[in-house]
Length: 115
Image 1 (cartoon, helix red, strand yellow):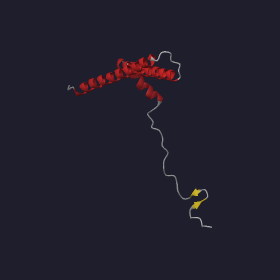
Image 2 (cartoon, helix red, strand yellow):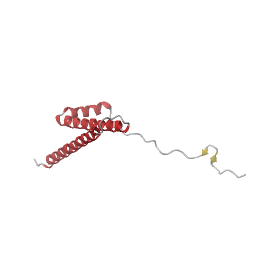
Image 3 (spheres, helix red, strand yellow):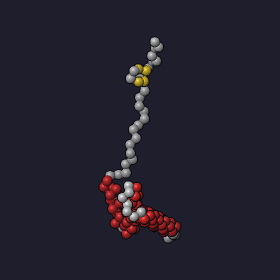
Image 4 (spheres, helix red, strand yellow):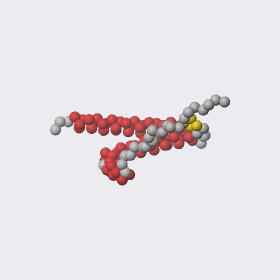
């Protein structure tokens, strides 16, 4: 029979401590701080436009996903509805991207203005 290696027991290796700290998620402040910042943005006309555009993208994507599910399960009576909902989702996303690009262009112009 062989002799055991020194420092190794039946329960594992002895003498080694866990030096790796646990990973903790980043903290972004309290819920009240987050809600206060988002509330100010959503109440502005600029924020409300983008909030409604983002909600429109979410809604049309959900409609498209529902149409895909119905087609896959054989419950969709008119398969053309899938194409229509895909087109709606694509247009909503394109509109959101164009509005974002326009807002960034306007911001960059304001940033580059000399006073």
